[in-house]
Length: 210
Image 1 (cartoon, rainbow, N blue to C red):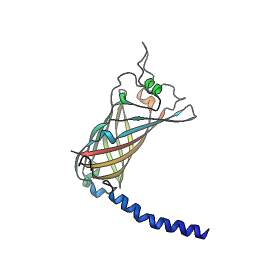
Image 2: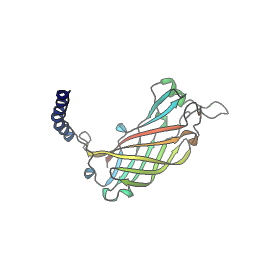
Image 3: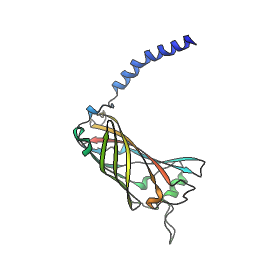
Image 4: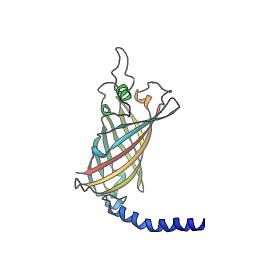
């Protein structure tokens, strides 16, 4: 047992510098000093919003929104003044099931409202109103407009990396964020509570400097 513990410690000691060298070679790093002031634009190819609901109490189900657009204005010396404005095309929602994806976008029947988003849904949009920095994290409050309804939402955000993108050559910053909304508050109440009202959102976003 002692030999095994020693072998494990030795392996970790050898691996640590290698891992550190690999991290150092990456274009982006979780180093706030790399962030430069200015206006950034969402990289739609590397930005995703995932959503999770509980299905009948059996398990959780996931879906994705992509192709987001928007801007971030940030000054590392004045983080509380940062502003973010992101638009999400709901019409491009996707799931692992073609049938479910089609149901999410199914047109409303005559005289009724759509079960979920319906055909040709309007884009969703989040506009920040206040940013409260906490080291490499921040609490961002703002307004989310979804399905024609605007309500306040609070994001728990975390800075994940910054540096020069080797492909686009642009200065890039990345963030992750989470929040929870009740879909019925946005008039998407189909099958509640069999399919949970609470929707957990997880956001991963990259911004490229203009």
